[in-house]
Image (cartoon, rainbow, N blue to C red; front, top):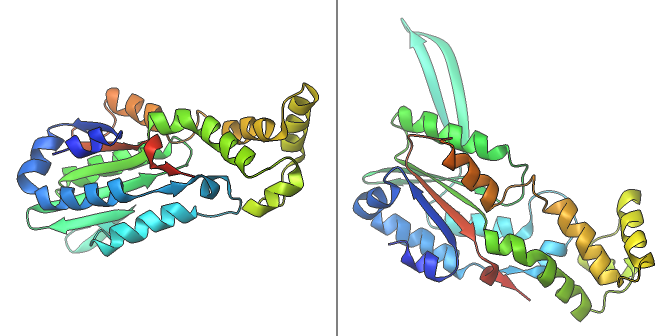
Length: 243
């Protein structure tokens, strides 16, 4: 059932019998998710674009999932002794799909610090132990997308004729730190074109090894974080990048 994702270039890893559970108990819900993901596209310009908060394409993906009945949900686990609440712990999950045969919990980790994976996996573990979720899913940047950023972003900047700091304003990038400017300037002094120098600094500072991407996620589940919760991990491919 996961073959459409694999054929489309996604990184896919099922742990703790997750694929069997999805095939038997959640075939319709999995088909919904696969349809949303395989149709989703990210314009390179959106990745370059400045501004704080959640990226526009992440918001678009969230809306697509919510429209398919995968809304955000907060689980509250309470400990009550003789009618008195002793403890209450909440777990906010990006997207939850309540189905006839159980509940699926999904987190999107586009570009956080990689310890967020520990939080997600440990939340899935606790909620699964409580019988609140049947399976946990994480969608993140795939290995091929991670590797493609430099080439694709630099090519887009060249195609758009970006040659100076002022040209970056078309992407909403108005302010950059002094350190970023110095780094780009140093590379240009060595003969590197502006687009390439900016891309090198941009990718390393924004999408570096300490952020959420496939290799960091895979390393955690390989050492058992989240066990024994069934898990489906999905890495977004470079073929999703447009422009």
